[in-house]
Each structure stands twice: as structure tokens, then as C-alpha cells.
Length: 357
Ligand SMILES: Nc1ncnc2c1ncn2[C@@H]1O[C@H](COP(=O)(O)OP(=O)(O)OP(=O)(O)O)[C@@H](O)[C@H]1O
Ligand SMILES: [Mg+2]
Image (cartoon, rainbow, N blue to C red; front, top):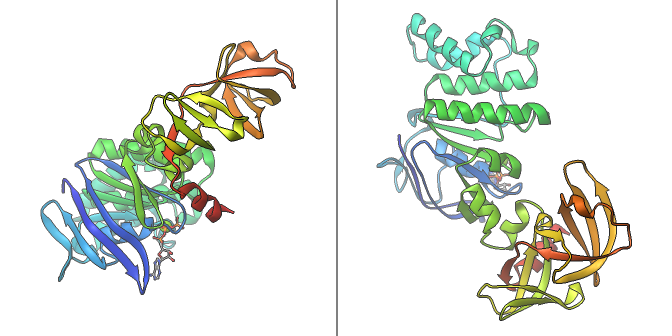
């Protein structure tokens, strides 16, 4: 399979619509991540691609072949897809080799071929030395890799991974990220990866589909999503951001909550806006548009994490501005703004705040 095409897929459970007109084409060898808060519909989308759920409306194609849609429904075992579920069920009574060999055993693959293929995938997931162990003798991360090896051994062209690292500690999770990415590139397969962890999505993906309440908010490369978010939800979900209500005019946005001071602006929005600024996009300078008072400063080694009082707002500034480290709390400071994202004031921010409170 080279591509997966999802055409206007809607899924409802009863009258609860959990995915709405999902449109996507996943290209050959792409690492795609479905990202979004709990309950937004990620697992449901994955299960529809695998064939464990039927779309209520719309079609899914593998290359030119319709697998779901209208009266057509290709069952999961005929889709040639590998899937690793969040709860990585490995058979407790089988050793690692038998667990991984299972998909081949049930297909009556010749023994010599099974041995060769299992050894190959165990090497890929760095578990060659553990072939004869039982799952109870493995760590969580090792069991996770057994589940991954079992999905890989059938050599699927498409691998679906549902939060496969969520049960691991931070260090192991980070190293497994690279291992999965390496396997995907080595085998040249398509991966659809589900997570609600934005760092994981940023680190691994060719493209991210960010979903909220069943609707794709934006799809793009990690850079696109982070630097040019389509709306306030996207800006807020990836990275840290402060929002300010403002008034956009020619050349500036006036912000009442920053004591009525204005920030230079070259964009096209006019009138009421939501301005969004990431803490790393503020910087201390001798000559800048914002004047305030340094209220707190935390030395974090690689950066300083500061709070600056400007008007009624306490603004977060993350800087490696070493030259300003001599500043005392209470000092008058001037801030520049490297990058400001400006969205029309369409009520989305208020809607988001209502949900999160
Ligand atoms: N079989 C089902 N019957 C009824 N409702 C369901 C079913 N499966 C999922 N849902 C509902 O669909 C919505 C989306 O669920 P889904 O599991 O896809 O979310 P998710 O994005 O994977 O969330 P999480 O990050 O918590 O795993 C939820 O509101 C859930 O309650
Ligand atoms: Mg889920």
C-alpha cells in the first residue's frame, strides 16, 4: 500500500457525533500523527482505518481499493494492517519468540521462515537476547517492544500505533520514540500514530493532524503547526502561549491588558483580535515596545523563566538573555516581541476558556 485516503468520514455512536467529515491523504512512507485532547476521536479514527469500526458516512481507500464505504467493508484480517493497542497485550504463557511468531504461526508459515523473520524483528527492537523469556520476566518497555515486534513481523505496509508509549517512564519513552521512527524509516512503511503528547508528535511526525471535538483543526508539518497555527486552539495546544485581547490597526496591535501599550504588527487583521505570544518570543532589550517591571526570575540552567508585570498582566518570558541576569526583582524592564500570532476575535478563545475551567 502506498496511500491511505480518508474521504469525508463521519462517525457517530447513536446521536453522539465523534468525528466529523475527516478528510486526509496519507502519502507513501509518511509518519502521520493524530493528536488531540482525550475524547477527541483519535482511537475511533484509527479503529476505522484498521477495520474495527465502520464509518457512519464517507469512504476509506487503501491506494485505489475501497476498504470502507457504502456497502463495502473489508474486515480487519484482510486489510494487511499492523496495530499496536495502548494496552499492549502480550500472551503471558508464551515466551518472547512465540509471542512475536504468533501472527506467522496462525498462517502456517514454514518453521524455518518463521525463525528467520522473528530473529530479524527481534534485532530491530533490540530484544534478540530476550527471545526465551516470558513476559513476566520483562520490563514494561520490553513488553511494549514485544508487541511492536509482533505487529512488525507480518510486514504490514501500514502500522497503526495507539499511544504505544503512554505506560513508559519519560526516559524510556524518549528512547522508544527514536526506535519507532528508525524502524519506520528502515522499513519504509506508513505509520499512523495516536498520541495526546505534543512533544512526542513534534519529535516523530512528518505531518500532524490536530483534532478537537471530532474536527480536524489543522494538518501540517510540526513547524507549520507550531509557527503558523490556524486558530487559537492550535496555538494553545502546542507549546506555551499567552493570549491578549487587542485592537489591530495599521502597523500595530493595541493591548489594553498590557497597560494600553501596542506591539508592532505587519499583518492583515484589523479591529478586535486575539493576539498570542509564546514566552520564548519575548526578549529583554534596551529599546522595545513594552515597558514593565521584573517581578520574578527563575534560573533554569539553559534558560531563565521570568515574570514581568505589564499593566494588569503578568507576562511569562523565557530567555537565555544572559546579559540581563544582573537585573534585580522590581527593576524596570523593556521587552521586545519577536513573533506575535494574531487571530480574529471570533469567540473561540472564550469558548476554550469555558471548557478548560
Ligand atoms: N464504542 C463506542 N460507543 C459509544 N461511544 C464511543 C465508543 N467508542 C468511543 N466512543 C466515544 O467517542 C468519543 C471519542 O473516543 P476516542 O476513544 O476516539 O477518543 P480519543 O481521542 O482516543 O481519546 P483518549 O485520548 O482518551 O484515548 C468519546 O466521547 C467516546 O466516549
Ligand atoms: Mg484513545
